[in-house]
Each structure stands twice: as structure tokens, then as C-alpha cells.
Image (cartoon, rainbow, N blue to C red):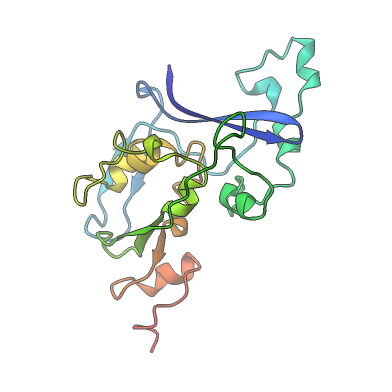
Length: 220
């Protein structure tokens, strides 16, 4: 059973429903391992019960497990790969929805009847407890262009400094940012999308490998 937010997007005349959610129960049949390569947990191996794809692949309607391939009506639907072919992509091959929004390719509605407007909050929050990884700058603007405050607060994030015990372990397990990211929002493995503010303790290899400009304090 799935619980969460349903977002309706129209692409080339086709309605696409995106469900931002967390499964009601964790899968016990699939697992993945990863190693934290730097920071305070360097070398520590974590165990998680979610499957992480190496690359993004757009599933055909006939094999997505949702549509009936034997029903002739399936041929009246537009294939997702065709509908999304003109959208900007991230380096992993999934749709860059924020860029699509910035380019005006899509215009999320505040409601189905277009009677209201989104309340956009221009406020960034900096997370500095990231070890050697670059700090995380959370942009409210990119999120509130899509979502209402109540989608995240207070059920997922408590609106108080220090009240949320956020860690990569919990995010990879589908909590906090992981409620949407690696599901309907961009992948957790595009590290630079979140870890984008280098600091004095950030190794230059992170700047180079993630395409982040060198830290001015360590460049000389």
C-alpha cells in the first residue's frame, strides 16, 4: 500500500501522476550495501533494504507492472519515453524537473482548477554537519514551487532547529529527504545536487569529481 502526495503533470496531452511517498512497509526481498567514503563515518558499511539503480531507465507501459499489455487500449497511450524525450536530463539520465520548471516546460498547478497560486518561500537552510563532504544548502524555493508547506511539515520535518536527526543512513532508508528523492525526485547518487557548498575541510577530490568549483580558501 502506498501513502503520499499525488502530483498531476500534463506532458504532451498526457496526464502523468507522480506519487511522492514512502511504502507502507519495507521490502525484505531486496537489499543494497554502500560504503561511506569520507567524513566521521569513513569506512563504515551500512546495510539498507532498498534497491538502488545504477542508471535510470524509463519503463515501457507494457512492462511497468501497472498497465495491462493485453488490453488494446494500451496502444492509445503515449509511451513515457516519448512523452519525456524533450525534457532536460541529469547526468544519470533521469528528468531534471527543476530545470524543466525553470525553462517553463512545465507549470505545476496549486490546485486542479487553477484557482489558487503556489506560495513560494525564498529561504535557504545550510546543513554543516556533513563531515568532509561539502555542506548542504537546502533551497525552499525549488520545493515550494511544487509543494505546500504541509507536505513536509511537521510530519516529515519538525520546524525547529536541531529537532530532526537527519543522516544519510535515514535518508537512504527512505526517511526525511528520502521520502521523495530516489523515487520521484532526483537521485540520491547525484551528490553534488545537495552537497554543493565546499568548506575548508572538503578534500579537493570532491570538488573535482563532483564538478564543484575549488574552495578559494584552499586553492592557493
